[in-house]
Image (cartoon, rainbow, N blue to C red):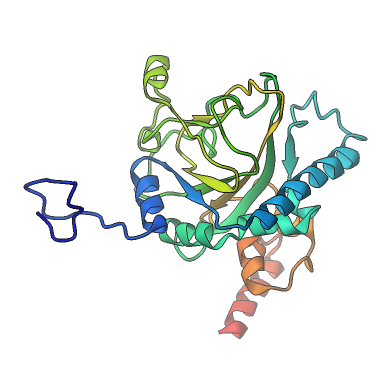
Length: 279
């Protein structure tokens, strides 16, 4: 038996084996093999409460701002909050969680960009909502890749239970081009039950779905999708936030300020000149 192997796991004919020494190692291995993992955030109870309150404030702010010009329910946007950290800045810390960033580095490499942060509300009493359908977080794509292109860190503002509509996941489906049959999904999907304050991490090519909330309380979450910088953001965050939203170089990099598409040859040459001068 391998000397590094757990005494409870016996095998023979094995020449190499993955090693997992901590929660990060376990999450990375699970994401690579199964396409999902559940990770404790490490946030204190006080921080979790702050995020919960900020979530509700961002929801109210978004509804007040956009419902004047748009029928959010007709657009099926009434249970979604787009870029909530723009209204409640401390929600950006949910995307900047050190454990999440380290997992991203291991899977996506040193350079990755926050493509989107959305508040997701699973409404009470089985009301339908737009995440209650099977999908990939890179929708309409039917291919596989040797490594992840994007990771979704779904932060559980509330506990995820079977009763309140926890996410359903189809393990290892990030390795399959086609959407599996109904029979396969019914047999092999699993419910990602998770405590509040934790993350459900998904390879964005893993098929998943919200399930029906059978309680009288809404179930809230914040999805934070990180991508390789070659993929465009859901919303152009640098343009939306403005050039001076943050002066922190690390935050600006994650928010995509360094990978904006030049709108002219002059802008392109300017970005090249800035890189040359920086070096």
